[in-house]
Length: 207
Length: 207
View 1 (cartoon, each protein chain N blue to C red):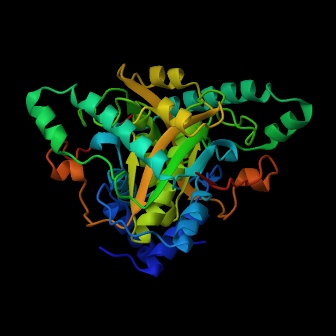
View 2: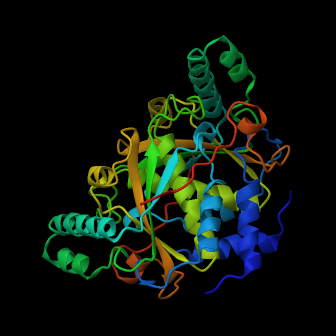
View 3: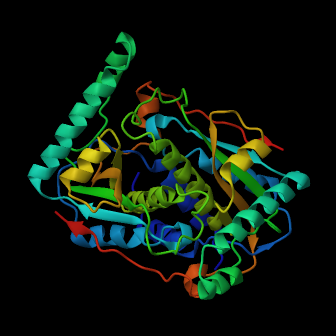
């Protein structure tokens, strides 16, 4: 299976126009498109083919409100860690689309999955969480190629989310995903545009 | 920026034919192709736009041999954890392409980067490692679209690699990447083909 330059260019454009989206239009997503996102995640790499990610789709409005409340608490605490000027900048940022995103997913990682029989993670157990990160990114890119936006929310108390959704003891919270049609598209990160943190690049060292 | 169905299909094919490659042809990779891989990593998402990944390209044969030795030790220890039948299966697997891959990268994560000013990682510091995982996967997919294979090696003592490459105190080892032209292509994970761990899928729960 060889890829053509035009396929490589398509990937490059999808990578370039992927954003962490926080501004969503409220209209629901067609179930067939959601099913394609679910299916794409299964193509992600994972240590020992263990596929340790677990996903809960949260439609219940009371649960969503509780998560939004948790975000607002965690965000207020984070804001207090900055001095006056940086805090004013922080307060102007919109850091989550929890208020409007029509599809919301809680993603967890199983800490000691049977699948994979431990292969590849004896010296580096964090490869399980890395597998989940790559599965999230697989969904993220697939969503973008289908003209949907994804926002990954980490300004949450992970243990509070685990309790709220009453997940098994061996699931740890990895991320909350907000998904929907974005209000706008951009090839530049919002935090760069907002002046919070410009894009930086580190050259590869050589040895 | 809207994407077409054919661009979405190109992405799906790249995801489907990406593999963790351990069988490489030895011929070197053109520097222009390596530069495209380096550039693609800069398109990865990162918490607070912090871009915490750091990459060392290792060409020195003595360093490569030391890493290969470390892999063989860690792999021998891992093999001992299985009972007789599973151990025989394990011993038949080829789990790294360290012997032949023409391009080899050590990838690290900065534990408290100035970039991003802490945004998004106060409650979940593991988002830094997740950012590095997504950067690795960005390179991985870009390589696949350019008909190169990538193998991610985690059967290594991370602290030994940090010492071997004498990295700064606040860098933690994330992965060793083997990159080159694959000896064969496949749309199915090697561990599934080998009977070690079949592909599994978990339905999304609903709340």
